[in-house]
Figure (cartoon, rainbow, N blue to C red):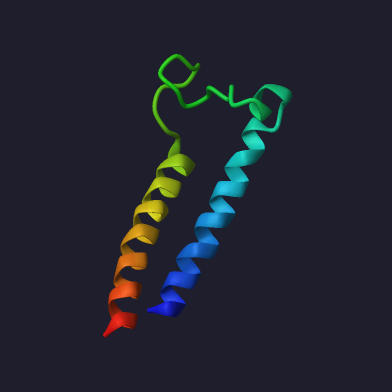
Length: 72
């Protein structure tokens, strides 16, 4: 379980850093990267954003399962 948790963690970090490049402009430094907001140009998440959300949920679930298995 620790290996699976580690793999999910590395993939989530990679996907998050890859998406940070989209907001690397000066406005993104102050939190105004509004590409995926309601009033932004694009509506909803792109495929990469959906995969990142999926791995975020998997990370949360694997964190709980890892803590459960370690405590036993």
